[in-house]
Image (cartoon, rainbow, N blue to C red; front, side, top):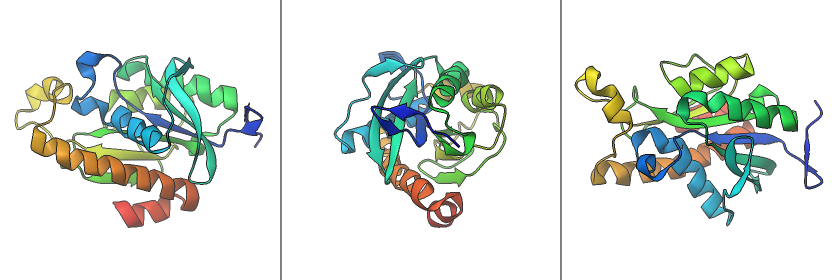
Length: 196
């Protein structure tokens, strides 16, 4: 598989954090992916301040690989447009497109690594599946818990977690970064054993 070149070096992985752009959504439950890749970039001393592929992104060395770390700016439900553009440009196969996002079916802060799978009702993932034409891309889900009243789901996902939840979630962002490192270096199976 020929990989695209970036600054003379091949881009080997896309790391995609899902969320909604804008201050209004910044710290909401639906932005767990954004917050995780922002922390990853911060730890690497890099800003996700380049704009292309309908995304805020940057290139960095991570887990021994040249990675393009991106936050699609399309709003959640059209995330696949941004992912497809970057994947096509750099000729990245779906199995090297790692997506990090929120999951209401998991308890707050619980991680779940998967090598593939359905959207499970997540519109961002649904759109990525549609644009990549496959479910076979690795993902790291970060649990946000769910409201007791299922009718309040939309308000829940675009709501801000409590201070106590935020402390748990910040720790889960750190663990999600470690899980991403494990997926890239050792594969999904090892990451599933270590982080699920």
